Image (cartoon, rainbow, N blue to C red; front, side):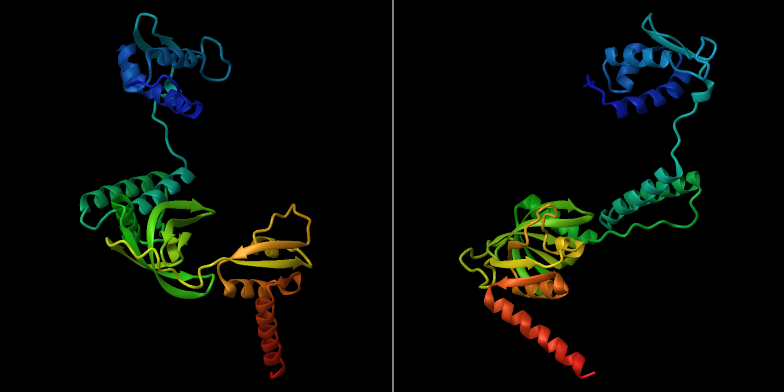
Length: 305
């Protein structure tokens, strides 16, 4: 079905494609031309009217394109400068090559035909834009992992994963219900319900070390004892940029005390220690004491040097 609405960028691209097409299809019927470009006849008439006012600088009848389409058939003259199809720039070519490389990494090994087609297209683009050597875009998550996750989502199945958690700086085995893959701040995350934690979690794909489909629903009554959220209170002493980003604090908030939540005591301890004199943990007392003990241990080691 022909589209009745045309976005500005799509229309600009179509106008650039129309000229070389018309040069090789003189006298084409207006309705056939509209069908060829998947737009309505009214939209195509509007496009041709726009082209009728385009041409070389000077913009007199001698430099403008000469179009005829009132009879229902389209011919074009005086358009030699745009007689060739659009070409791609060097930056566009590099982006296409890297995109094709990422696409190739997600294709199963048994689809050799698709791999060959992608390689052929990459080589043609590289030759066209003058790229020397082979450009490679390495995905952060393997094709096998993405395929397993996508398969589990489509089948509403569960996943047994081995995950490296930076919160606790440890590798854990979890059972999850995958829901969707998200792109956030140049990273890919898997949003899922974690049966091990008993709550929704976002898992960074490049930290999932292993994933296997599990068709058996886990016991929802069994949760890890350390999955409960921990409320803590920090006092900002010198709110530098790294401190604000580390604790995800709104930089426009001028208050010095912030009540936050985390699922890992280890993360709280490491984050406060990494902030130096920029942050003081005021509550809870047990974590405050643990941080003081670790800080003293570090100082004692320096004294022994």
